[in-house]
Each structure stands twice: as C-alpha cells, then as structure tokens.
Length: 355
Image (cartoon, rainbow, N blue to C red; front, side, top):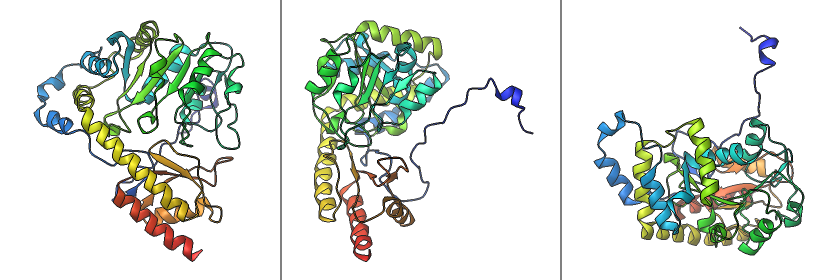
C-alpha cells in the first residue's frame, strides 16, 4: 500500500550518506579506509575475559574509564573529553549542539559527504567553498560570516594535510564561531590541532578509533575541547540517548588506548607501505595529491576511473569511486598490507599494459 501524499507532506526526507561496500566474501578490501592489522592484543584478551553477566546492566553513561584513558593519553582533563559511537556520532552531536545560527556553516565542496547529510537532516544552512585546482582548502573562503566551520585534516577523500599555522589562521578569523577539525586520519599525517585547544575556546577536535587503532567495528569516536563546550555536548547527548557506548566497546577502547607501542608500530607500518605504494603508482602513470592519510586519491590520465573501478571489482579488488563533479576520474585506494597492495599493483600492471 502506498503512503498517501497527505502523510508524506510532514515526513522529513533527506538524501542519505552512502557508505562504502562491505562485501561478505573474501576480497582485497581497499575501499573504506579500515586498518589492515588487528587491534592491540589487549583487546582480544579483554574480550576473552569479559564477564557476560555485565551485559544485563546498562553501561556507564559517563563512559568514565574510557574518558579517563583518553584524558591521560592526551594530557587533558576528563571534563575535556566526549566519547560517542564512532566519530560520526560525535560529529552529528556537534552539529546538533553548536550549529544553530541563521548564518550558513562552512565546509569544503569536496570533503566527507556526511557533513551535507547532517546539515540537511538538522535543517542547518550551509555553504561549500570550492577547493582550489590542487584540491586544497582556500583559507580566505572561511573568513566570511558564518554559523560554524568544519573540515577534515587531512581532508577526505583528497588526503591533503594542512599544517597547524593554516588551522590556526582559520581559528583566529572566526573567534565567534565554533570550528570543528575532524582528525580521523591525523595519526598518519602530522601535528594535531589538539595543541591549540587551550589557546582557542572555539575549537573542537574530533578523532576516531576506526583508522589507526584498528577498531572500526567497535564504533568509538571522541571529541576534545574545553570543559564548557564538552559540557554542552554532554547535555545534548543525555537529552538524546544516555547510554550511547556499549559495555564491550568501552572495555576494548581502554585497552586500545593503553597500548601505545602497538599503536605507534601499526601507524609506522601503514605509513611505510603508503610511501612505497605512492612510488609504485607513479611508476604506473598515476597522479595524485601528496597523501598524508591511510589512503591515496589517484587518477590515471589514460584510464577511465569508472571502468577501472569496475574491472578491479570484478577481480575482487575493492576501491572507492564517486561519480561526482571534479573527482569522477579519481579512485580512493586504502592502504592495505604489503601483500594486498602487491595484488593491486599486479592487476594494474596487466590492465594498463593491455590498454
């Protein structure tokens, strides 16, 4: 039975975010920027030792143990940390909490596509300044009056990282607006904007366990800011869903934070493989911006990106492609293990040679 038009009139309709494919058969999976290595050993241990009787109880709504671990790791107060179900949940809460002006919020035209979805879902006006011809953010575009600013650093899907001086300039020019720096990929890049938290009361930095900490399946994200803004976030969270983090994610998250050596070694391996992969792609004729994430945003001047995307998929190698203006000839390639990348390059050599 079709729903009557009179009912549809008052139902909110949005164009949803489209996540990367999650194939259920064995593939070389280089399409969703997951970490190719296992989480810290302590995560497996805590899962084996967990008392399942805990599952009959609600989890700690304050996520105190995980918040404390993150606060210790970053050298901030517990009242400066907010956690949620992946950084998507955290950023969504930020949109709901901080972006309530009549002026449009600002974020790049080529960036994480969830920003536009949240803006439309919450009916927040927005404007998307264009990246320049080299896919870089033009900071002067963010000097205009606005209702808030958000951008990833490194940006996605371009993988371009801007240094702290660039970020600070945007903060200085927008003292009366909340500026959110989405650092999902910062561990593969450079210095974090967290260094500026104590200097700018309008700054919120978000990060995730999904990339460098190998825990995309656990859905853990967090924001770090000053106590006043974190208190505002918690007020909205408790008005929305008091028990956002489950018992298992909280326990495993603590273990992932505690093992700093394992974390740093995993990042080192991915960065090392990334630099090797960049050279291999160049040898094959691909061009791409200087990547500082755990993926490469590449195109081949003589090969159609969609055709290559489909050919890779048919051979069980999954990468990401968007049929969107300015980027429809690019593929986003996640950095996998050395073996997974070698499989990709073997295929590309044959495919390009036959072209």
